[in-house]
Length: 69
Image 1 (cartoon, one colour):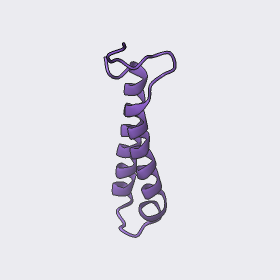
Image 2 (cartoon, helix red, strand yellow):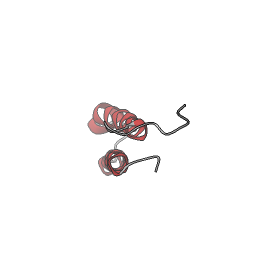
Image 3 (cartoon, one colour):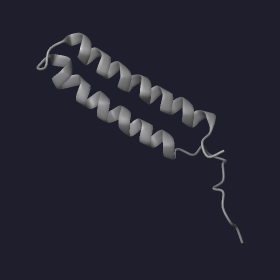
Image 4 (cartoon, one colour):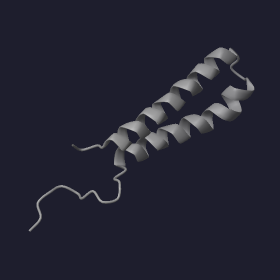
């Protein structure tokens, strides 16, 4: 299995933060509001980077699969 349960948990956590960031921007209903300009960009970039990290994360003790000679 290419991804472990921890990877899926991290991906789900990042997706929830992305969804909440967009939801809070929607609920604010202002293009130039505080959350849309100051908070959301950092939470969105951070959560997208978190999802990227979650995809490549390999827990200690797991070996890379492939040909070993």
